[in-house]
Length: 254
Ligand SMILES: [Zn+2]
Image 1 (cartoon, protein in one colour):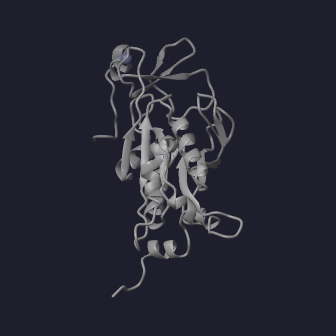
Image 2 (image 1 turned 135 degrees about the vertical axis):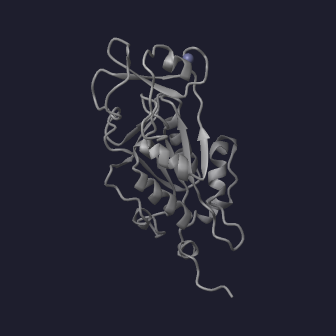
Image 3 (image 1 turned 45 degrees about the horizontal axis):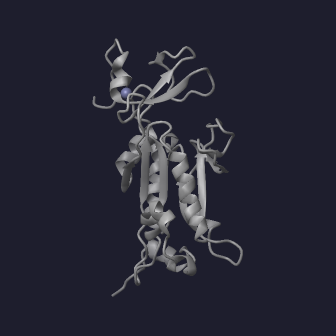
């Protein structure tokens, strides 16, 4: 008894799958970073493919956007279509621009707090003579997703054969979790910490906000647009080294 096909199988059977030719290609060496994700797209016998929600997190300037752009390139090189998103309010490189510090940049779609990531995002990806199916969603600045949006993306990844790759910060300048990052750490099927180093050569896992005179800022809004402040990726030791007051993280553990 096969019974009623699952929503995922129905999505699969109506054609939300990678192009046949692309699915048969073997990723080259340059594509190794995204091989696991590409593997999730390949049909396995009669079974619909399994896709996942991924969260790659790091401190500032660890190469998250570079990695996202590389992943997009790997998909597109194999004839697959991706959709890329970044936070609408992050206009450091221009609205909707995903920019790598290495010099690469791409225009992306934007998301705000009212964006809904439901299956409509895939509708225009239905295979037609002119439009390829969406093979992957790539989201930069994913710490700015709301917890509801993370649930929507988790559902999308598991009800459609479309992996969702999120890149973002884990904690803010106070050492508190971004709500979107906390939800991603809870729901993502695969977590990966991207490493970068502090000026003292230890692993940097914290984000320090400094004012125009280079002093640490410990209070303020989690998201600051404009102003003279800047950020540095630092290790926990350096994060606390100039700290005279005990740090508290209200709301995390009671
Ligand atoms: Zn350090």
